[in-house]
Image 1 (spheres, rainbow, N blue to C red):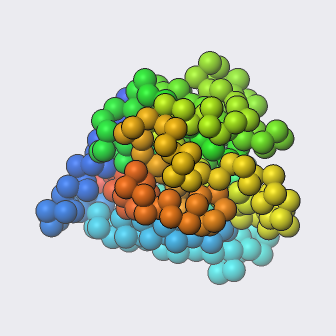
Image 2 (cartoon, rainbow, N blue to C red; image 1 turned 90 degrees about the vertical axis):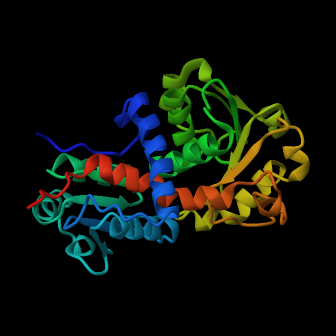
Length: 305
């Protein structure tokens, strides 16, 4: 049987995604009650990082340990990947020694090529195109605090980046309406917009996007690899800062999310993460729980003796 990969939210059915969110909530409850649950004992996750990370590394490494397994951190500096070994060759070798691989990378093609040559599950820990694990955490956070997101209105304010792209996939899979407020020239991927059809609207005015929304989300204006664009982006995106006044235009029970790290005073006002409508800290924690659900779903449990 070929391995099941998670490179995009589109790799699962809507039922499977909702199941992962529910399972994340269950695993969170087990941890809070101090109940030991180790279905992945003796299983090993390889974690390849081409981009720096706090939450992704912590959540996958701690999650794997909590499930009874282990995780190995690999950077291009420490492996032959950084010395020119073909991705396909690395995938063949690593998939003979590990039980799953999580990759945090720049080019999405790195993930697809690795997965094409891997006989174990490959998980997208972030690429320049998509960040599906983060969206699972976002969906768990909304589910915990407000119930089903189906039929609700979500506003994305800022850059049409990998997070925005994945929110489009989430709109399709979790059945909500998405309004994207971004400057001209910074739209999300056209092929995803075409796939989403009338579920997604592109707007220029953040107030119009946020009006009546039950969930508002944003991200930094310049991502890793865009350091040379910072000054130009700061000027372009200044009208797209999310502050308390902008949230006031949303639904009364709105939740604000940010995948972190946040640049206070740029994409959000200095005080926004302290606003009672912000659930960013719960959202960050939920990376741990929903990714444990994902690992449990993808990785074959160890055979009991």
